[in-house]
Image 1 (cartoon, rainbow, N blue to C red):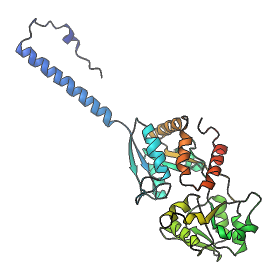
Image 2 (cartoon, rainbow, N blue to C red; image 1 turned 180 degrees about the vertical axis):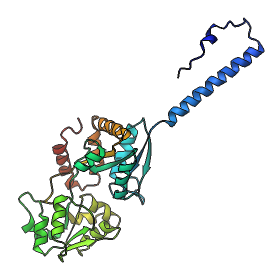
Image 3 (tube, one colour; image 1 turned 90 degrees about the vertical axis):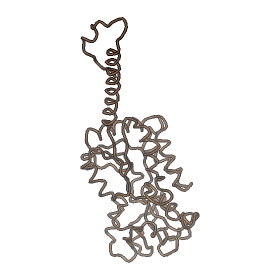
Image 4 (cartoon, rainbow, N blue to C red; image 1 turned 90 degrees about the horizontal axis):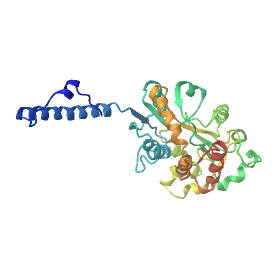
Length: 318
């Protein structure tokens, strides 16, 4: 910091030996300079912009309670990569908010951001959206390995499972979490089968965990979800329970979806997104992020995750 003094101070003639009064005045001048410097530093520090990162209760993407709190996949992307890389900001982390509330805050809070949202034309219009940082495997169906033969008529040549054919057959009971989206095409198929006895919708707060427990205990034949959900929801009761389930991609889904960092469409939010994009394009960044994601996948699904990532994001790791 440069402090300007009055020009007269530079031309004033000083006696060869400072008097006590002059020493006192010099002392007061030095103190004033130090106080001004401290005040200026404090003002600059106070002006440092703050970002609020909002999280939702969606394990294992965000884990907001229990012994693994803060260790979800998106938690790690934020805490190990984004926050350390965005050094010019202060950061605040708020979890346990429903996604509807987060979206309202993205509309109203100019310093709000969230990791891990899909990009849609409406969201691009309302919010600042980063480049994609991951192309995760889309939601599919988990079925007990011992029941694989029952799916023969609903599998296509690529081994994908047709949700519509599965529900049309009426012999396989499929469990879903009420109010949750599984993708546009899958949602349309579920809606067209509402009221059918082989479509089971669960509305309890822990519906996802309960559904996986039910299919594992043979009370349901299949459950829809992301590939990492079985391992998370069943591991607490039995670390190997998810090994008895096989994940199938749905014929109705696209091969992959892409997720982004989203901030409010304010000057601050747009600035943050530009810096996030620069971070994502650093060598090895997307590769490191993919590594966090893979820890939640069964070994047999990891090659698929890498193939989809390279297909969707060919510049990954460059």
